Image (cartoon, rainbow, N blue to C red; front, top):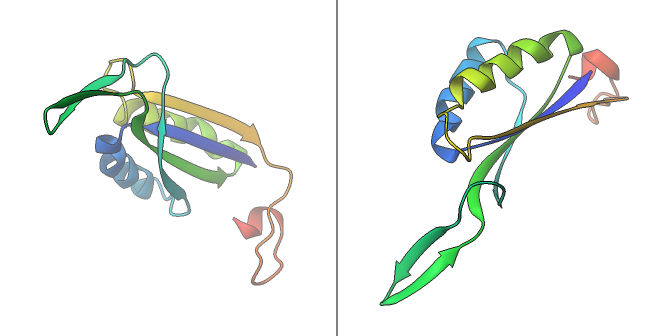
Length: 112
């Protein structure tokens, strides 16, 4: 089992979510996050004052899947979340030792 964490642009979430659903991926966790990287900060203007937004809003999608699904899910993110510009995001993949469903006590693949 693998955990996939993807940080993407908020405006790309719907198309990514729809593509994941078509692929049969229904279990995921979504968080609104903010971060910085190579993408430049933005200038804002509020009530006559200019300010700099250093943390850019993003969406973080997390899911645990079987190892054989990883490549196709990564392909979905690469195809659907890309704008070919700085700030498109990152994908992190890590091993998962165990999954346990709290309600039933199921473990491993059955708990996903």
